Image (tube, rainbow, N blue to C red; front, side):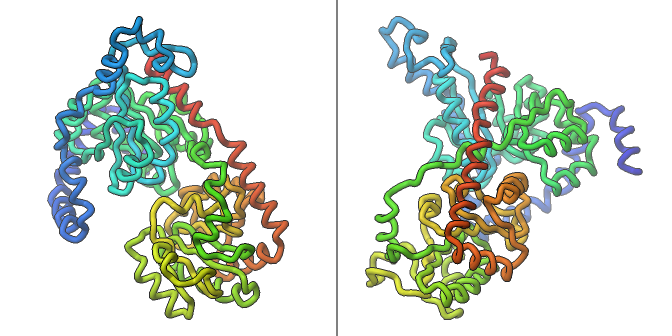
Length: 479
């Protein structure tokens, strides 16, 4: 009832008033936020790297289009950029402006960075003289972006959503278009873009059940904030319905699908025989791989593995924790459960040509998980037995691996639903059911193979979203 009254009252308020109230609320909680940030800086060293950039202290070179200058130099003496095949888009439309657009792409952390990487590459192909700026919030996201997106010209941390900070950062970068992934809604920032006439676009949009409940409580405010967004490209029909229910103009919301399908690698990376040798695995053993596990899930996997290794003596377990700072604790936990443990980085010096039974390989490196998925007999995707929301199931699915995950897959809700419906994955309620399903699949390799192939088919059928989003963005830029 009170929400309805607030909505009627808000219709009489302009966007400026709504933003004023938002900033007033920020000022009230600012002292607490500063104190919290100070504690985090003392406890976690990793936050220190991003603090000054998030406060708006950026490199002076950010406003320069170095790529355009470099291209101009390399094309000196040529008959014209429009005649150079390297400077035309794949669709045959040359980028003829002396300076291309400044495209700012924002991805919160690792998952969003991986999802947007193919889109950034296509934007570079279409706008070779443009300037691509990629921002993240987390330090791990920043490291991943620098590793995976060499096509970008600049990498920055996204500014705190304070008016004086976002205004300064926007003036420095001068974006032609701002592209943000999923549910990164920052009111001051989006409002400042709208005030300057800079279009913003949500891609791979997703409104989770939890976010939707929160947004509904302040729906009139968010309606004003989202009015300035030019377009919403969302993953599912449910995401579209939720945005419309929050007051977004239906003509601005388009369902395109999930770009994470497009980033899934469909080919096995490397020689499986050599990978097995490198891990000291028997040639014919079954490997259970638990990826991106969290606290509580390693214990569950260890329990399942102890039971399965008695029935299937050749089976091995590889654990890949989501956070490597937990490696020592996990190693101790496994040893207390009577299991042998060898870290990935110590396999070469372990003294075994073949790892003995009851041995768990503990992955303590970054960047190997996707390659290792290709040799797994079974894959358990972590963050799902505990209430985290699940992690990327598309990497093992694209490689035709049979997949199991727990009841908490909210982050990958639609993908998980499709995989289960098509019998490309199995969702379990708890550790006991996880053990039963692993036992079933190990005992029936043909059934396990069929499950993996069904998972791959789901990925293949859903690909092509990057090109859909690229077309939308080019239309906004007038290309």
